[in-house]
Length: 402
View 1: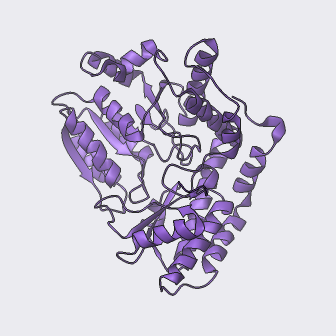
View 2 (view 1 turned 135 degrees about the horizontal axis):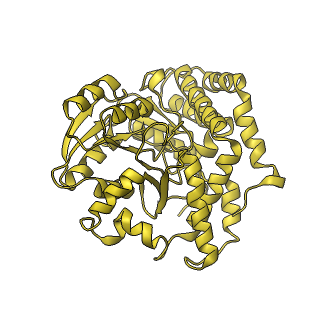
View 3 (view 1 turned 90 degrees about the vertical axis):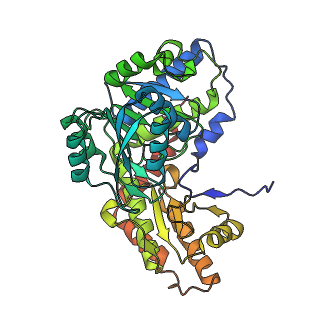
């Protein structure tokens, strides 16, 4: 294995905060005892603030985002239940597969790849399917880097009396999400994307309505430990990745110290800077500006060049970016993450510079230096967000502790 360190400008996992990695080297904690119980509980309480909920419980699932989505579907969907699923890309389709695997009858609301779900289409579908139990939605469809209008979707769910389940795996900590105010019943987060912690860890928040539903289904959810109802009782009764959870707790503290609103603005600024840099290079951004995500940018490249560009970025600049997911944008997409610690010019500018050099090497005509210049013009117009975030991290008098 190469000893060099790659920079993760991916849709996930993301670069972890250096101070988290430093603190972890000093920590060992077993998965039982008062100290662990307190640490786990405080992590859950901190995540409530990130989800912006006072009406929900939080559990921390030791698994991938995909497994967390499966867990939620198992607790919400029963045989024959009608479910409205919003599909605007790979992860909407993935939700659909999980709903179907538990016997759900799917009513699909789809959008063209690279476009967000139209609220009016959903409203019409929801009204026409009054017997549908729930709406499943992805906030940030990272296969196209498109943001879905969760606030409006939540209004429709409330109007039509349906549970709302939201995949915020890549957006939590980067994009505004107000679980209580937006009528979200179940929300899935993730540790190593926009929160900047370590992976294979999913905080899941569910309110009383979803909890009661899961309680009625607990005998049907197999195996037992995947039941929301079971987790309410046993919590930490089996081996947990304690260091990963401690890392998540520190990432939560960093996010809250920065301030969620400031953090959302910082990610918005980094995303806009990235898109402007890409366009200055002569490349096209996939979503329309008003539908583009804050945590990741989708760049259309000449057909068939996707993998070659990614390989050169990694080999020559140690920068990892994502590509297309299956049929969604096949061979034509770069997906550049700017989330957590990387939503900053210290990561965005070098990535754009490296991409410019790679495109030139592959024979494309690229205006020299224009990508970084365009990105920095955006950062210069809104310096407060990223400068204050950086200074807060290095204010050693108030560094967050485990």
